[in-house]
Image 1: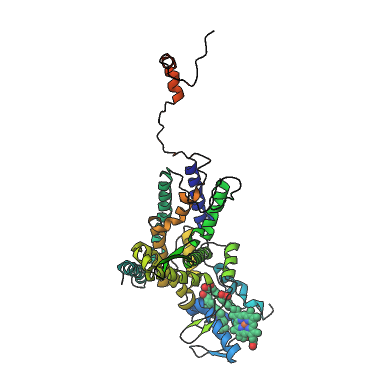
Image 2 (image 1 turned 60 degrees about the vertical axis):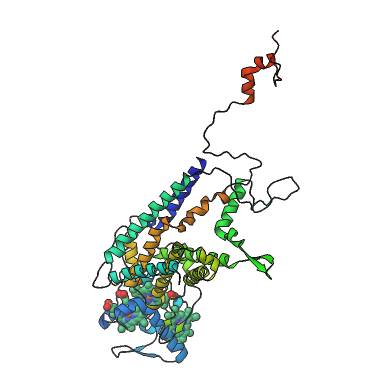
Length: 128
Length: 347
């Protein structure tokens, strides 16, 4: 009987632990974050690449940009529409998306990513 | 070719394809693979797990069958192996703890070999232990890390683990393969490599292959499929993580939704995880609970100090010699038989 109580106690602890996500979020709704576009972005209408690509692969794009600038010294990027962009994190991305807190950060907080880029790159080039 | 692993491999591939094809544009079974099956899988997991453990809790432990791996408590000048042959609950707990976090009994694995055809030798065979440790810890890390999809706000220990796990950065930038950001999670790669090792071990070592059944291969392939699809989504065919988190958060807050733009690969990934959860209570994977309930590890090795009584013993009515003598003392004395207790002389 002593063993049975121990087993029951262990089982209860196990169930409490594995149902953590259910009771941790109890009563909270967690909708996807709302992203705000700046006036400048709204005027531009499109991003560097199509939106679906940007949503999923912007980090990959940034990595290629970084590589091209730092390793090959190329600074110009031409997208599919033939538009020219300076391959720069702070000067291009944050030119349109100068509201980093309400754009990049909202998504990143939700997805629990913390890009280390801002250790070096300025995150508010316009000094707003 | 071995039918045991071919059957398992084909089963996993078919399961993957069912979910992948079922959630393509035309089929539109997102609701089934994104909401109904995950919920069913969790229910099956919890209920099945409880039933299995409660079943075990009812089974008999008639003997104290501790596996002793060292000197038992004896005369004071013999040094007792307190952990390997524990005689108190405290050391049993230490033994169990070390068994569960370090797999000590697996470390003792040895291989028997005939040297020069005549001389029998035993050698330490450490790879299974290394592979098992790598596998279990990588799996644990991966599971905890995935809590970032199931909690909002994400608790600090998940973020911390992510940081530690992704501190190595690998950049591959060819035209065919490009991967650099996001950072590489070591645990995912270790998990895949360790699973692959555990699989190859079963295929390449003849003795192990002989005792391997489809039930041994199926979970391995399932976990490989889960790891592979996860790695693919993260580094190669990128998915919309925010939409996916919307879906998973919908599940845990009981407000299920199917957001736009979630790829078939994700549904296939989640379907394989659901299968793993649902399959868990009915399979050898239940060693997760079984390890805690192994009588060879969780009992004390003190049979010489304390008598172990089978708790399921039928309460037999005994009639001791003392009671027998009480019943027949006068008659025994009359017959001249010796008695232990002489009746007191009546004054």
